Length: 242
Image (cartoon, rainbow, N blue to C red; front, side, top):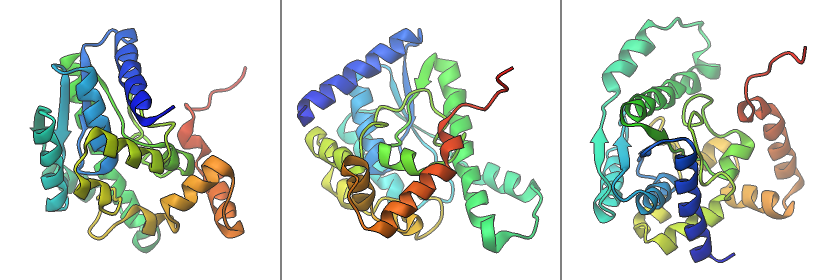
């Protein structure tokens, strides 16, 4: 299908899923990145009067807030800001430190941010009778590039079957500002962090593998290893079969 048809089908899908859940609208985090921008625009089209975007800075890069507000202003998306710096400091300062900071400390503490954002979105969703909409795409979900019960803790994920390349095409069609489309993808979890540097490969390489199986042998092996290692993140909690 072409991009216009894809956008229409995603808007219809959003309406269908929210209706099936008996909810009234949607709430989502707006990070200033391309994925959340695309989801925000789709949600606004599906629910013109029942979409809430939430800006949740947690020692975040100022430019991310600027880009989030640009999207909210251009598409008339209501925004609430919840600053998480203080609660992050309190929780991170309370948790035990097992002395493994150089090995897993930074990602572990960065994941606190994603989980605090999940708590915030569900608090608002429960008050409003809304569903929480996630912005993870297929490329991220397949290799486990998301925080379990963080940005992975959502009710619906409209981009979940789209690779990053398709998200960019959809962003252009929907009119997402070019500066957001062009900036390096980042989860904004710490200064200077970018998705591709952390993954050790580009989204183009991941997309090529997922859509055609093509790619250098080392890239294919790395993606397959990541897929196996994160399988638990893509499944509900295991329960005994007896």
